[in-house]
Amino acid sequence: MAVDRLERRKARTRAALVSAAQTFLAEGRLTAPILEITQAADVGMGSFYNHFSSKEELFEAAVDEALEALGAYLDTLTVGMADPVEKFTQSFRLTGRLFRADPSLSRVFVNSAAAQAITTERGLAPRSLRDIEEAVRSGRFDVEDTELALALVAGTLVALGRVLLDRPERNADEAVDRTAMRVLRALGVSTDEAAELVARPLPDTDHVSAATVLTATS
Image (cartoon, rainbow, N blue to C red; front, side):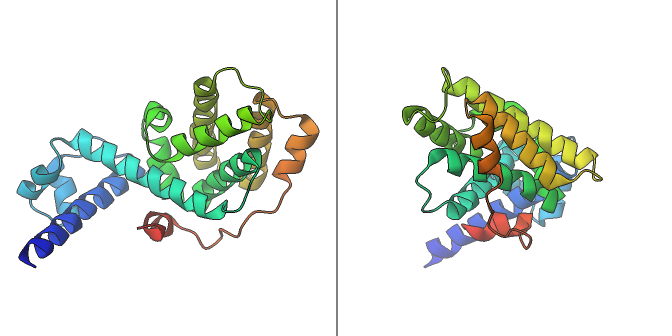
């Protein structure tokens, strides 16, 4: 029992550090000292080094967990979809809308390195790659190199997130769907089919916040 309590306490400490780091990332405070992060997490400096060897390792974990939570959440919204292109399209459109619905989630994403979003083994990247590869196998996407296709998608999402953050006056739904159409066209989908895919109704995400996403699958 004592061991279980210790493990739970360690898990709570780590979660507090990751949550604080996500807040700092969302605010663009990448140069904040470790002491400031531990104070925000309400944990001691010694506790920090029980979990992470450096601030960079903590920030990497914070981005990784945010992207994994978002990816897992999107998976719950595509259950039952047999068509990988439909799954890919819905996930892309929902991600764009979630970024505008909760800017803090968007900032965690766009303030992290784009390369991490592309190469990480968890989060959005492997799920997007899964859908791309399934669409290629079924002849739905015309793609020669799936890794380059993933780089195109991830880079577009990062850029889209920045536009939505920097231009709050833009119509987010329109911007996201127009971008989704361009991405689908780049992956070999016809104009008519791309237009039909982005016109399909989406699940209601008006109530969703970063906190909801980060706890939905925990």
